[in-house]
Length: 123
Image (cartoon, rainbow, N blue to C red; front, top):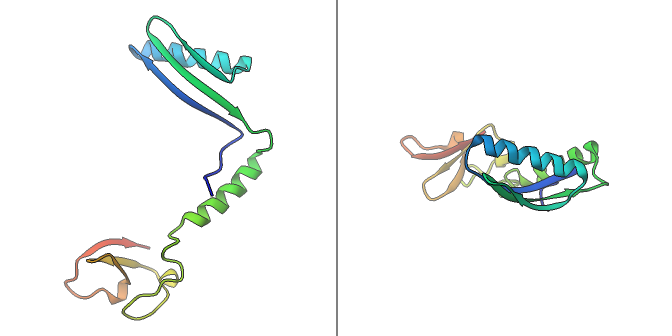
């Protein structure tokens, strides 16, 4: 599943000689977008670029946030879900802390041995 997109998205690449020219380019992007242009290549003496705008008429604010919540739930440590600590067999997703130690092993923080190097800690 890909991350959801808002109702209006723009892909933009602009180069400019300085910040004043960059501002002129952004103003031109805004002008063209307000006119309804969807794909533009344009430029001037001090700037140039291209952009494309997409509208998803079915995407609403509520639909976007519902889709975002579903996507985020899919992304959150899927490899750790239902994983157990190899030292005490507690489920790692039910613990307050998880440590990654040498060898890439995920253990619960209570099973971290004294003097053992902790590479990463997640809560």
